[in-house]
Length: 398
Image (cartoon, rainbow, N blue to C red; front, side, top):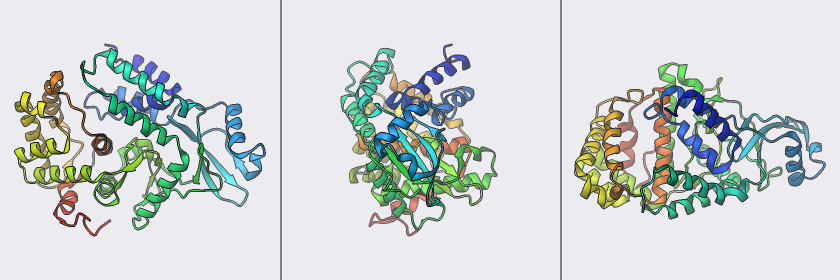
């Protein structure tokens, strides 16, 4: 009864005033594809992806003067003080340099880096008090990793390096474009890059089926390359990190603060899991999931029937011939019911390795976007070549 549009609107409004971990939690919730939250509530929460409350102009000027010096305006022919986007860690402004370059300038909110530890602890306390987490579940390693990840996201020098790396890795992929770093204007709290036109990726919801399918084919191929070839993955699947150029149809990739290495054990775990799934082997999937740390032994010992039911549903959907229709979500109810049965048993709870959690965040978020766009993608055809190549380098394709 609390999840009425009016109440969720109030929650979204309050979260939009917050920064860091609290707002990121709201962003994650807002990505729900209607499987748990009603569609209208998901739409209300979606405002958290682009419409956070921004800094007052006087505060913005103080930050820029501290990073660039008191005469910072002399660097630009135009600097728009009203941001074109505002998110959990910083806000983005459009600017024109004296030599005619169009830039996007991301400016970090004051105090965000210093508040990370308290933010994460407060979110953890909220989850514990709400009863969502079972007593005795040790989430300390996950909290430590969350703090580390958020701290890395506040380091714009690091993000600039990651953005440049992805630009180089994807230089042979004409379907996507990555902004170029402007190192002369970038600092640890300000990130300057080329401005790239683009519409929100959700604008494709009304696009022709072929275009929606093509975009998700490109994004899923990218995820596979990150996991099995690049050895680095941008693990934040927030929809606001993708835009579409209306004239060219190219995907604009944004925000590389959450890019992190993919450990060999993580990639190998996914490869074995997918191999067993492609063969339709229930026991093989279960064993691979255990070996990779997706599951804990207690789940198999205590909830084998429910677990087998979930695996059977996934195998049945994954091994249908032809493209997978992400817009058809009928199977999710069965997965949810069996998952709730497992979740109701605190002794069966298990936290996978952090590397797996971050990779799965990207994979699941990509699937949620595909569901939002009602895309149809031949997943087996995409995945197969990466599993057949004994060298592990994957297919010779974009």
